[in-house]
Length: 251
Image 1 (tube, one colour):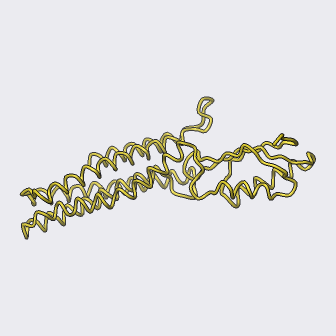
Image 2 (tube, rainbow, N blue to C red):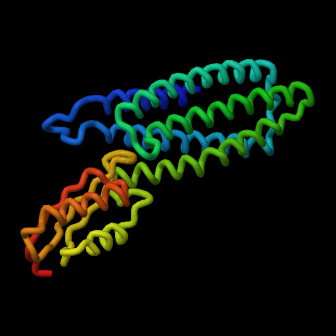
Image 3 (cartoon, one colour):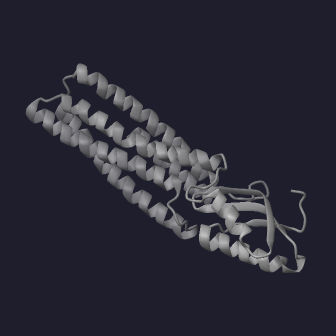
């Protein structure tokens, strides 16, 4: 629960940072704070999952006698806290989406949702497991549920972690093929070459490319530029294009 509160606080702080206006030193604004928060939450969840798995595995061979009734009460409290967290997160994420709508859910929001989801499932599991142990004295239920929860969390968190690292490393956004973008530009009539093509994400759903496009007829430069930006926007959901028109390149 403490990890959950810390993760949500970090996510909400990141959302508030993205509402700040760009500065001469931060010309893209503070959108990357969302990705940093997502990365921090992912790492925390993976470490927590490994610890839960370890404890569950250890208790399979040495099942402790657990005070099931206090455990169940704590589970109820945890569930109430998480339901409140879901409501709070929903309000803030809705306001964030209205301000800067993305076509895919922001990684920071996804990380916060995953944090709450895993903790909510954990709270429900604690309640069910507590009732089972109280009524049947089957203490292995605690270990079995702990291992199952860790197995549920890790793959989803790993996917989130990989996407966060990809954005921070300015990799090509997920769902966009580098060669597809390159070929689409080269197929524009009047384009004879393309070099220094780079595609990256500022934050989730906010993709940006830069490229040098070679043409033969300089008088058609603006028309070709307009067609290229239209293709990038409509076909690849890339809206912040920086295209340099060139009339000659050695290669």
